[in-house]
Length: 284
Image (cartoon, rainbow, N blue to C red; front, side):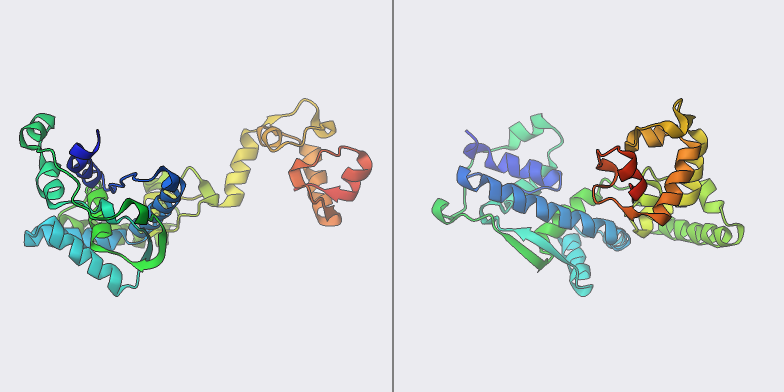
């Protein structure tokens, strides 16, 4: 039975930066999943876009010796001052208890948990019939959400304040040299697996990974391709085949067609292989 171990599950949710969501009505499962996912996505976006601010707050809180509750309040104040808003799922019965956060979540292991844990009855007075997991959009970050962000941020490699200043000076020097040498950043960072098509434009991601230009990446890919044995007469126009094998004459012809002809509305998924259709329309 889950109810006697409610505080245990709350503690697990708190440790992992998640939230405890009691399933009181199975008919609301779909609503709960959708609202919960949308809230998590909005929080992840905030963590990515505000990474530097989060690290600064944690560093300052560590040097001041304050607890997680005060750190979360400071983090919330930063988000509100910058008018950062997120989605929030209604979850009145899932608010973590004081025992779950301050006692059970700090247990060293399961043996420690078993020695301290006391079975409890739910303290929420929310009626089952009135339960609602609706989504509240574009709301200010709450303290509970700031706590969850803080818990997830504990997995980051956060330097101390002094180390942070040294890293910042080093980053500035590297950036300055990169502007003069052109490709210095490329030599000192890891290539992004998404290459030039990457949509992550946060400072943290762009500093850690480099993104080669599309034309250079395309040139490298072409040089690494194997020539198709059918050459320009090949009729396989699937993306997988065209990326794996090169078709010298066919590629030139396709580029010419791209300029001279009308695009086919079915694009690369077109199944009409007739010469009339291929001559009249090009397939991107």
